[in-house]
Length: 68
Image 1 (cartoon, rainbow, N blue to C red):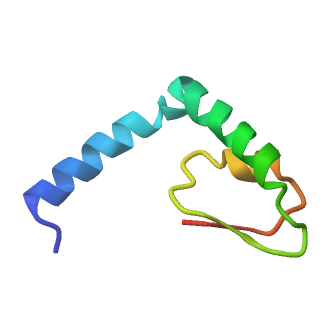
Image 2 (image 1 turned 135 degrees about the vertical axis):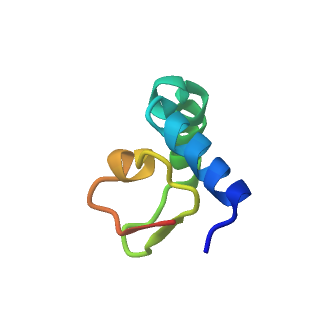
């Protein structure tokens, strides 16, 4: 059973999630630069820890992405 603190945290994160992508410009810029420098191999799956709104999947369509 979730504690009141856990419920409070979940409530606040859920409210912020609706607007996350509107304010994620820096994350998108860093992600784009990282992808250009890393040159990911299409043969290897990519782990996206903290995938948020799925921008890695959007930028690397066709790539095997594991989102957490």
